[in-house]
Length: 51
Picture 1 (cartoon, helix red, strand yellow):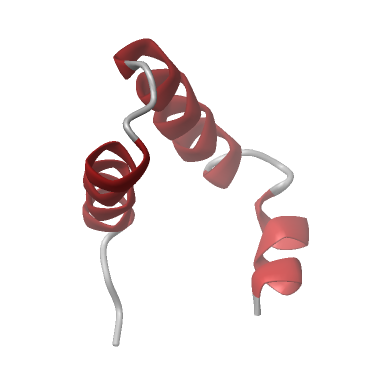
Picture 2 (spheres, rainbow, N blue to C red):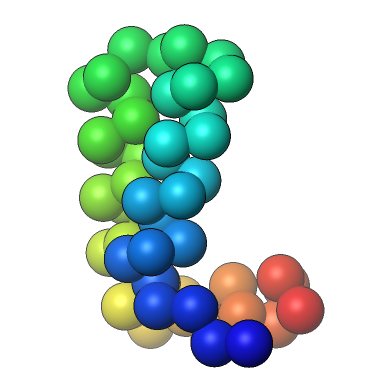
């Protein structure tokens, strides 16, 4: 099943805020950082580490 990156990030962000209750700015920084890293030269390295 292929899930768009933005949908996966939104789901993780929602669940993280709902369950852990971190500060809102921290959630935004982590989500934006993850999105930017996924589109960088490190993406293949992360992809092999996740799979």
